[in-house]
Image (spheres, each protein chain N blue to C red):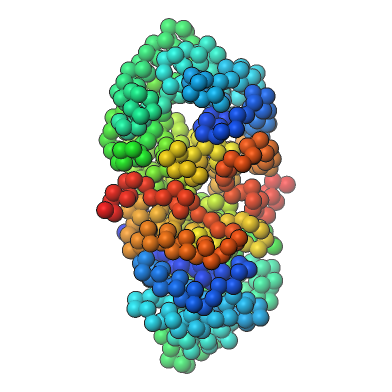
Length: 310
Length: 310
């Protein structure tokens, strides 16, 4: 068995994947407060929003402003989600460190959500890469292959199709790629199988695993990926987010629980768990009545870990 | 990496570890209904109660009756927890398939909970084994080493001490041994380390892992143990149970979520997930206001799995 990585990064996606599925609109000021405190707690990578039409997602309308604030924080790598070339142009203009183009490996999900086939999204990647290079921009481009473990609309998604699209994104100019279990269908055995193949294709350009905790397996799935050497994972504070097809279900892996698992397993994260828990409490306070998740906040840190911190 | 086991057993501990930490007293009739429906859902091993003084745990006062009922169900292996020789005598008298003597590897926890040092519990194992053999009984004896990953009272518990006590239990006559993360301090990396050593000591006589989900890691911990070939795990329906030192925290691994993880990972359990979810709903209805846990009940089965069942 490969030893676990000595370090891992949690990329905070609560401000994007989390808030986009929540009714309460969080103000720009509070988003900036969240980001500043996340950085103070040791977070170094944050997805600050997405450049989608404000009419579709009012919650993301202030992404330019939030990105501009995030860029003022030393050491923070701020990323944004971009659904297409138009969004990518805004990310480049705003000087994002990274932009993520999502591609749904499920044909049915891709058509329903993006009104494009997966291969049309690959074409969009090509245009985005050309635009980035033409601008001489340093914004990195990540191709995020979603519904990688199945889809609530079409059901099964073949690993071979996921891997074909990942290769196509790389060929079309993605600097790096990632895999997402958008709807919480993954299990640790399938993570081991698919991620092993993905690493063979993408090598060092495979950068991140994104797991939803819809059926309670997010952390087990992370552990399976860690064992293959993957060392960056998306997560959202208080596990906010979710799947529109499973109302009330758990959302993303909870940042604080994942940070606990990593640190308890001896993997360095640079995160201060107590500060993360305080920030969690603050953010949950802003989301009155919205479903939040996670377990560590209730139980607290183990005595053994509290001692180790002292 | 060792391939995952092809089959695994979930030992239901909701009626013991679950109910013992819950205020609502569940009637004998309902306990028997639970057991019968669990068997109908495919469960083959159930811890039906514990032979402790009824004054200490009124919830367990009917263990003899529940055990007698469980014994009428063909194919079910009914186990009971016994804190000492006196309890063991009742288990033998009742014809339990298995009795579990818990030993706390934390000296402080052992004194606080059992008023005995761990080595005094080893002496009790010797007496229990002698009594079992003297009766010519077929009741198996399991030594369950608890607080194996740390303790809320003394903090750290050394792996060497856990393994020493496991060996001592085997030497004293235990037919088999198991490890329990009584307070939810385990992480998958420490599970890999400790279980690997335990398997070296006990071999085929190592029979079970017992994980609490206090900090959300129960299923990740199970996955780590599965990778070493361990194929029996304790769990409780709706994750009932918990840790008295972490009020409101998640309890045991939830049977239904664990069953989902195993089956999704291609490990045969013989369990019918839909029936388990129906039974979960019924039991939760009996425990009005008590904390219950788990995620699958909210999200439902993935479309891919529902198709596979059809």
